[in-house]
Length: 135
Image (cartoon, rainbow, N blue to C red; front, side, top):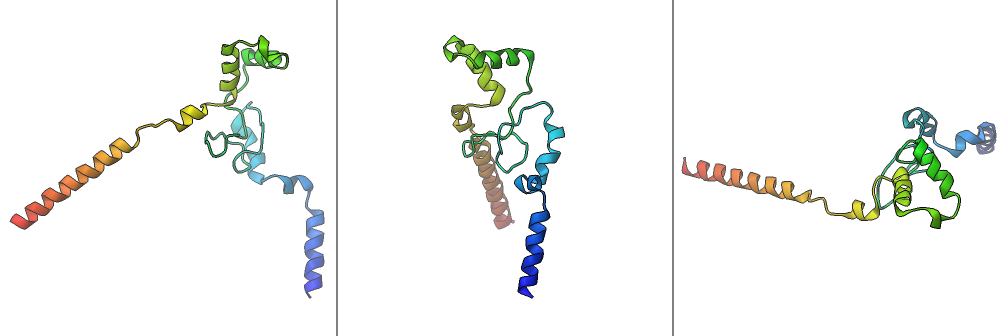
């Protein structure tokens, strides 16, 4: 019985196309969503999505769609990088990525409204408690 199950599963694996096993199905359907952006890697979970995270610095697709200016820079990029100006290098970087690591890791002060709301709720709770003790 076990050998029969093994034969059936082996046959199913042999019949499955290699392409379907190599990549998740969601990646095939994501092509229409990304537009003309170039796929440059597997990404965070195999889907065609752009995520800026320091934990996984290589997104699956480029940040921007190609423009004629970027195409000229990409051709120039294939040569010596000493011929590229600093602004051209920055434009090429911003074509692929939205933020630098310094921008990703910078403090955004998200804690301030949270702490303010916690103190507000503590104050309201204290006044309600005082009111209930008095009356």
